[in-house]
Structure formats: structure tokens, C-alpha cells
Amino acid sequence: MQEAIEKADVLIEAMGWIRRFRDSVTVIKLGGSLLDDEDALRHLLIDIVFMETVGMRPVIVHGGGKAITQAMAAEGLEPRFVQGRRYTDDATLAVAKRVLGGEINEALAARIEEYGGRAMPLNCAGETNNNVLFGERITLSDERGEPIDLGHVGRVTRVDRDTLDNLCFAGQVPVIPCLCESEEVIDGERQLLNVNADTAAMAVAEALGAEKLVFLSDVSGVLRDQHDPGSLITTLTPDLSRELIRVGAIAGGMIPKVEACLATLDKGVGKIHIIDGRLRHSLLLEIYTNRGVGTEIVHESAA
Image 1 (cartoon, rainbow, N blue to C red):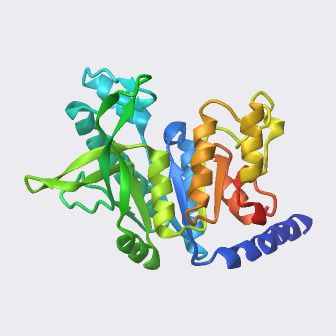
Image 2 (cartoon, one colour; image 1 turned 45 degrees about the vertical axis):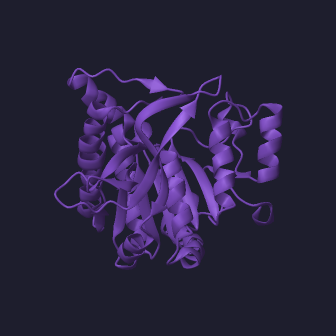
């Protein structure tokens, strides 16, 4: 009986959050090693089905860099990275379109359906082009300020919000690969561009005015001490972020990620979460419990 009462207490705790976030959009960035972790991926997708079932409107944006690298190796192609970004020539783009925009995208949507939800894969890899991301090609600069060509690499400048709103309203989970089509039409066609998954998820969250943007990673969140998992910062504000960057507690690749999150907050997204997707039901624990399991990044007034 005591175990049953404790389960009821959990449901009561979740009820307040379920009511609060009903009909709100949550953008979930899925990628990295999680796509290769069968057990973690299964629980994450079940969490997403639960979210939609209780009235939230989840939207998935996914990467698939490791799978692209493996597919390239199978075809004898050597990956090349420039300042951390994958150089995308014609051959690499063809692999990305097939693997990222086709196989992974379709498989994620199919598994959500398998677990009892409804999902729509949104890509331009199949016979029907239902892509929702549009953008422009980008270049980087070297130490002398000279442009560095990245090939078919771009950034999102426009999101087809109407399509996403309609799918969410109909109870379907949009599943979006980090590929976009160029705004410019050449010879009657748009150029396909490879996009960083984090920035694609941010663009989607901004366009939808999402209540939440969740980054699923293989770390528990932002740590004060990178070597101490117990130093997790549960709530991070702009002022605290800048102070932790100044003293070096936030360093390396986490700096641009946190800075990009702060910029996204300023563009209308309610909260941003960084959580460990390997933790069983981490999405539900972060969203529907009072304490959460990762780091939430919020405005000063919401802390």
C-alpha cells in the first residue's frame, strides 16, 4: 500500500506541471551518442510519446554525425573537419541526405509510432519533399580574417512555422533533421545544406516561441567543476553564466553553447535545459518534477 501511495504522490506532483505546460511547445534536440544507445533512445522516445499524450507539443530536431561518418567510411570517404564543422562536399552531402535526412529521420518517426504516438518525418530525402528548414550558405574566417569555404554548410534563416503548428495541433510529433534548403533557387532547385544540430534546434525554438528547448547530451548539465559530477548547477542565469565564464568554470566548447542559449532566451524561448539523455526517463524527470535532473537556463526574473 505504501508503494502505491508513493506512486500517487508522484502523479500529483506531475499534475501541476502537466497543467502548466499543456498546449506549450517543447523543442528537443536529439543527437550524438544517444542515437547509438538503444536503451536510452527507447526511453527518450517513450518520454516524448508521454509528453504528447498529456497535451504538450514536442518537436524533435536531430543530428546524426556519427552515423554519417560510419556511412562515409563504408564508401571509402574520409571526413574532414574545419574549426569543428564537417566540410561538406558533394559526396558528403549525398551521404548526409541519405543517412540523416532519410534513414535516421524516418526511423525515429517510425519508432514513435511503434510506441503509440504519432509522428511526421520532415525531410527532402524521399519522393515527397516536406522540408521545413530554409537557410543560406556560411563561411568561416581564419586567423588572418580570410574566408574559409565549408562546402555545402549553412545556417537556418527561416522555419516553416505553419506546417509545424498544424502538425502539433493535430497531435503529431514533427521530426526534423539538421538539413536545410537554400532560400535561393538555382535552375529551379534549392541547394541542400548541412546545418549544426544545436543551432537548427535553436532556430526552430525561436520560430515557434517554444516554452522549452531541451538539449539531450551525454553530460548531466553545466558543472562548476568539470571533474566533479556533484557540482551540477541546477539553475543558470545570464549573470551567473558570465561570471562562471570569467572565472573559467565554464570553459571550452561549453562557452559557445551557453552563450548561444542566452541569445536564444532573448529571442522569446521560455527556458533552456541541458540534461543527460542516458538517464532513464530524463525528459520526464526534468519537466514533470519539482527538482529536475539537469541544468535549466533562465532569465534572472525566473530564477
